[in-house]
Figure 1: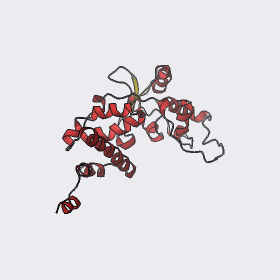
Figure 2: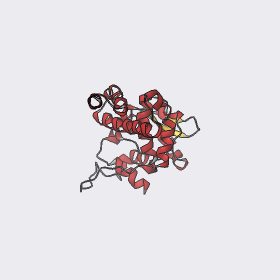
Figure 3: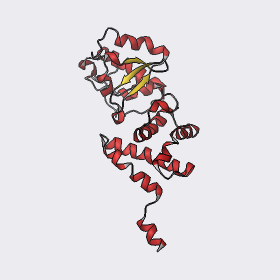
Length: 222
């Protein structure tokens, strides 16, 4: 009889995971769904193993503990932000209420391979036509679609007094603030200088290219 109950019933961990599925199903892309499922599962496993949580209400109390745990385990700041983004979104907890390491552009290393492509005018990062987008990418390290959305009003100062670029509808459909290092602030200000609030920072021709913006971040980090 005990065996039958075990087969039919769900473990607490499985039940907690299943309860996240309706939230995951509402996310925009299949890639985001896959990532958020992985990151929420990791958090649930942590709560079960470290704190014996049995409900999401109990799990929610340990988000800060989880951030500290990931730091102690040596996870990179960008990775910690990804894990916490999924968790905070599900539990409706503002990210800025959780203490976590600061991400900087130099930490990004992900890039597409050039696959032996020949340098042409449209993929050459030294082409003067793309100078502003390439230089800003070295500083900020965001996606091409996010560069295209930048407007005059997106240069901001965060609650801690740091200069930031506001990134709209980024990875996972989330908005974020990308901090600018002090030595790069004058250049960034020059890109936004004189623009109206809703005026685009870049003209379409500046982004109509095949430049590998991902590898630019890796080169800058080195």
